[in-house]
Amino acid sequence: MALTLEQLNAASLPDAVALLDGVYEHSPWIAEAALAQRPFRSLAHLKHAMVRVLAQAGVDKQLALIRAHPELAGRAAVSQQLTAESTNEQSRAGLTDCSPEEFARIQQLNAEYNARFGFPFILAVRGPRGLGLPRSEIIDTFARRLGNPPQFEREEALRNIHRIAEIRLNDKFGYQPTLGNDVWDWHERLARHSDPGYAEQGQLTVTYLTDAHRACAQHISHWMRESGFDEVEIDAVGNVVGRYRPAAGDGKYLMTGSHYDTVRNGGKYDGRLGIFVPMAAVRELHRQGRRLPFGIEVVAFSEEEGQRYKATFLGSGALTGHFDTAWLEQRDADGITMRQAMQHAGLCVQDIPKLKRDPARYLGFVEVHIEQGPVLAELDLPLGVVTSINGCARYVCEMTGMASHAGTTPMDRRRDAALGVAELALYMEQRALQDSGCVATMGMLAVPSGSINVVPGRCAFSMDMRAPTDAQRDALVADVLARLRAIAQRRGLQYTAELAMQASAAPSDPVWQRRWESAVQAVGAPLYRLPSGAGHDAMKLHELMPQAMLFVRGLHSGISHNPLESTTSDDMQLAVDAFSHLLGQLAAEMA
Ligand SMILES: [Zn+2]
Image (tube, rainbow, N blue to C red; front, side):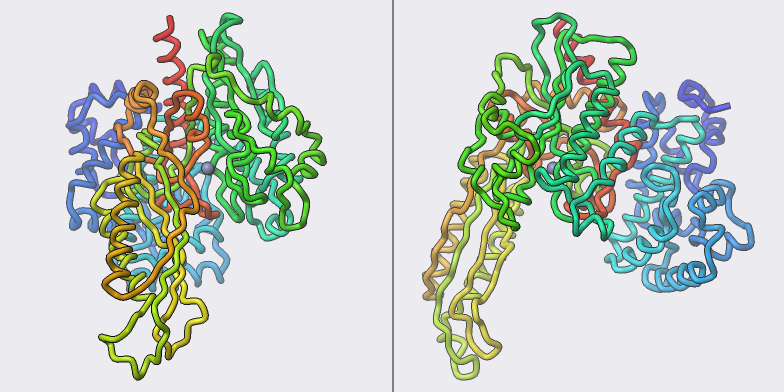
């Protein structure tokens, strides 16, 4: 018989501790402390209560917990001394039938890992979908994590322990993140399509209007129809648009969605999560035969990443009336113009202006996106509410000094262009740190035709500065430019600084942000707010209607634009639950 939250909430403390036995390896004290938080309103609430206990327990207790775990496919596994839970997990991942070579490799990694960190390697081997990771992936992860700094790796071990606990709890409660699993599976199936040159290497690359891109559009439109959307179309720029009609014919629409193109060798979830989460929520409405006072328009945007052509946000830009027809003459690396690619795909270029949406027909725009950063993962939070999409300013610059002999020019007579830039780079770091949410990056820094024995006479560099509001961005830029001027003056250098790009911040609409906040709390996850450092389709729609975003935690410190990008089907389920809650709440407000 599966355990229920009601049972757990009602049980005496010793009974409740016994009910949670084995969730954290040989460590019942975690459950015991967390149970003080009863009653739990959801499984997510219980999971997070235990996460908090461990976070506050201090390093010694954390290390003791890590050391309570068995080695992966280690001696204990061979001599059958594992706990029942560990045996189940290791055998599901196929670790009990390693080849002799794999076994030897894992033993070698175990030894190296233990020597480096002083605790056993811990990996949630049932993986983000709960089905068990392939052995090759386990070995690759093991080898990769050996290179982590010790403190980071200790935290990564704890994150894996929490994931192991999450799956053990799901088992105890007979809980399956069914919708999250479907969302996960849609991502897997869509990721089978990749552009030539990448597909062969098992890499995911889907750029605008390639065969793989058009195959993705076909799949998405097919799944939308299957999910019960009333109308599904591929529009003039390749967006897949699904509409679920309102209860009454004249109801307004809530727009949501994200992009299905990817960067080169990208992750499976960037963009696509924001298509599949609402798709799962609409499918539930359809299954229940429910109509809301408003319609739902899910848009799978055809292009956001600017990979094949220089233009970005083609898909969402067309909806806001910002599709620039001059883009049609841009050529890709093979000389194919965007117009040719669109004609080849059967898109009607002349219909693009008709795609512009009338804001009067919409309630607003919401977007679910994988975080693409480490914040939620570090805090062990599944969801985060976005406060603003950061505004951005980019400069392309050059510093000029005097190239001179590295041996004969005394230190106090130099006009070293690179040192001036280095000083500025350190200032940018310090200045951005002073204002929370701000980031500043010198991504390019080069001494053109420099030599080992020459004091740098020139230094080319870039600056990328972002902030949650335009005022913060402008203050950051002003301070950095003032410092640049001062450094150049003091060091006898000249410089140029050319503004290459400037984008306004897109603060979340307060009312929509609050709807996300109550949705997150309703599913039992703690409320956490954060700005978005990356640009998203929502910042285009921002020009037309109120918008707010929800972030979902990424695994591996939230790495993105990388094949390691990942999230769990449990977190996906929470995102679907939060999205459904947002729909229900909006319906209630309108009733
Ligand atoms: Zn994205």
